Length: 251
Image (cartoon, rainbow, N blue to C red):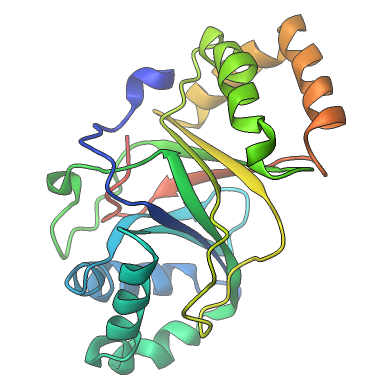
């Protein structure tokens, strides 16, 4: 199972709004939050109309927890957040969750171009502890200009074929959603434009092999130089994420 052949099954695109949430945690607290989240915060968020798309450990930062949450639109986001954070489950467990966190404000509010809508049966049952396979790689491009300036078209026309030539498929792409944050109790990163793309690998070794193939390409090196000089305000952020036991998104 390698490269884009490892993609999760996609049913349809219904999440018109997606949050990419990255939490900085106290040293050694990640497993505590993962266990609490998988046990208490999955079905209870979905019961009020939100979709928990995936939750992950960051391989390159032992004190980081990353997760994805989806909404049908901004009005549904406001309703869902009000219902969950004003409801009994969060009230019962907020202190324990917040005790693991240093910062929870590193949040990108995104609009899918190629979105994620995953098979609910792919999520392990409550109480499951076995870690599912897969390495989700999320690349965040900080753009010099808004995405409307043509970067998504450049990505599809120039970058995506180079990735696929190296066996790296693209199953999710997103741009900044600039709607007003109507639930200010949960801040999001404002006044910036990003383009985010995702791919899935069977393992770290699988990812490293395909990445090496990409980096050895003269065509890719030329494209990367053009990307940095023309389109990005700084170098890309790359997250290497492994799913928790109950992450819906996995290999």
